[in-house]
Amino acid sequence: DRTLTLLGIETSCDDTAAAVVRAPAGGRPEILSSEVLGQTALHEAYGGVVPEIAARAHAERLDGVVAAALAQAGVGLEGIDAVAVTAGPGLIGGVLSGVMLARGLTAARGLPLVAVNHLAGHALTPRLTDGISFPYLMLLVSGGHCQFLLVKGADSFQRLGGTIDDAPGEAFDKTAKLLGLPQPGGPSVEAEAASGDPDRFRFPRPLLDREGCDMSFSGLKTALLRARDALVAEKGGITVQDRRDLCAGFQLAVTEVLATKTARALAAVADQRPTALAVAGGVAANRAIRARLETVCARFGLPFVAPPLRLCTDNAAMIAWAGIERLRLGLATPADFPARPRWPL
Ligand code: KG4
Ligand code: ZN
Image 1 (cartoon, rainbow, N blue to C red):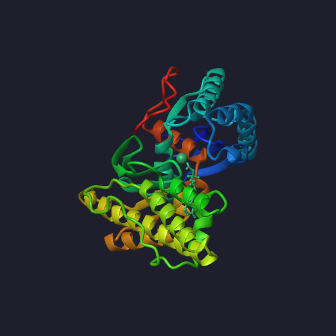
Image 2 (cartoon, rainbow, N blue to C red):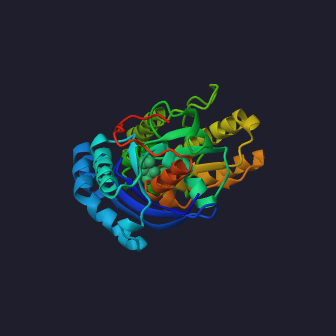
Image 3 (cartoon, rainbow, N blue to C red):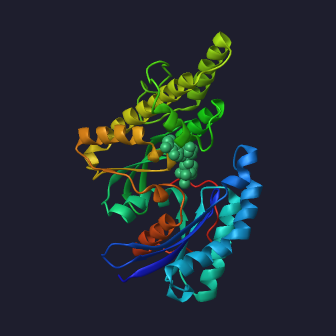
């Protein structure tokens, strides 16, 4: 074992990202740089990420983002021991941009290449930021993902359940759209909810009485739409206070589903003695949700680990770190590995 310095590359959705992470053998890892170039403005007019636009933007911008990450870290390619790249799951055009660049860089310099699963990158982040030990329970909640993982090792994940339809972030974004609030919906709905009455509208908590850790969030937006339309039919529009109350009711429903299922997941893995509950994903920024998850953790006597937001959302430091963890296990990747749009952990 020796100090490893990896370049990480992430292009699986709508962020073009590159980072350099250095990890001394047995010491605390250090993020030397982490560049993230988002594409929100490019997709804004279409109401969602357009794969062709994303692919072209990654292809155009990735070289510059990688150069910026290397410059910011103060190391050239000659200071890099290996390159880690997201090989899926995600939009295939973007993933291919990253994989082709990583192949080129490593072939030219005779370096090892490490293919990383994007979800493994999120799931291993609490070890980069907080150094927690295996096994731990991870709740991944973003605009695209929602699942519980028991993280047993850098290459060992047990999925305990997740959403059967929308991700919670998607539900926040759709709620904001229905109520005329700005995107991304999470922060704007949270801000409205802060001065709303969460008990005025009672929204459904789907699957709460069903066994296991699966969740569902798509029914929530239908219920919200119905409540909004009922107000409009009754008095011709919704007031500022109506909107706050709708947001508060919606947020409470999401929070209660996540908290109840987290408790169930912790109970299900109790015999494996998890060291912590960790969260990742943009929705983990929500203060009401965080507070409830902390309460659940306290009940189980476990620490609650929430990495800083810039490392909870998509970034390449998590990919470089997952690459370091895999290399330490001797898991370098054959040069002909595939880019995979679907890749369950
Ligand atoms: O992890 P992320 O940046 O991107 C992926 O989906 O991969 O997550 C973005 C999602 C968006 O849906 C956004 O509305 C949601 O996270 N989000 C929040 C909050 N901040 C961001 N949801 C609830 N409360 C927030 N404060
Ligand atoms: Zn992600």
